[in-house]
Image 1 (cartoon, protein in one colour):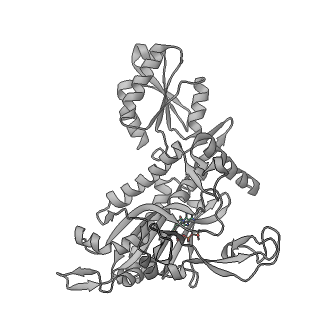
Image 2 (cartoon, rainbow, N blue to C red):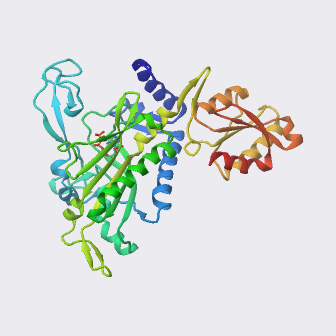
Length: 430
Ligand code: ATP
């Protein structure tokens, strides 16, 4: 795809998201707020489907994982111990002429990208978002919105261990919001100051780290291609060299994705050593009495951004075919799995039958009901939001108890008995 087509693509996706209720600009009626975005009725379904697929795959389906859901404002001592107060910063540069500010490591050249002016010397800018807890605003009441979900898994490590009696290796997973006072948010939902992460801290013995790192590398690939439906050719691994990794990491791979605005980080995989547990616990927090072991476990951390997942999925799924726009979402991610239409809106017997089919399917699937306009328009409307199947109730339905089922991708239609619909859809959607 040519460069202009790619930049057009992101505009088309942003516009589709707004038009169909996936994602709106945040606080729009007040002029928005610094690149914040709200997920609308379809967006929240897509996002929740991604999060539940992740939880199902990495927490429920594994024997070596448990989950938590921690408070996102933590005792500030956590951030002291984790090194975030001191080290969680990006290099900020300001233009001497227009005074715009940029993240130096993201600039291609050492001049202002807006006015070509000269840049001042870089300063380290801490990304932690601050607020005050309680009625008094002074230094003692300063707290931080967490910049990553990870720390709760370390701080709660002993509680999880005591209550679940896990043995190494095992992991703790969490999905939740994180906040970073990004210098330059942008590229739609790619970089925002409030976002969601899905993270795993996987606890191991030191000598296992290379194998475990490799296991998670493969798991992350499989998630991207099998669950999200991203194409292998658009995904690239970047081994982060010494000196550029986060302060806690001994090895990091970024998984980059070819977004329409360039190749950028989608997810990360880091070997965090025993850095965090050592900083939080005076005594080794793990003990296996039978094996005579007392130690600080080491940690491999795979981390997934939820919003970047949504964006990559949308970029992958968006396609234009002659007169229709189709979101070719994997069925497991589609906001609606099926839509039901009565052939004609003004025939009560058709509407009634269609309503019956709709309510029966709704017990199992997320279902849309549409009776506006003609069938062709309704198909296109569902294609644009990625609904895999459309069902039409017509006059033959009243005679034969069967319906037309139309496939989003092939546009082929077939007649299916109403009593067989549920099993038919279950097979197709799995
Ligand atoms: P970047 O280099 O893009 O700033 P990072 O390396 O600081 O990202 P991590 O600290 O590894 O990011 O965070 C883990 C994941 O959280 C990222 O891979 C990404 O998916 C997501 N993420 C991080 N920052 C943001 C943000 N500002 N907006 C949306 N998602 C984010």
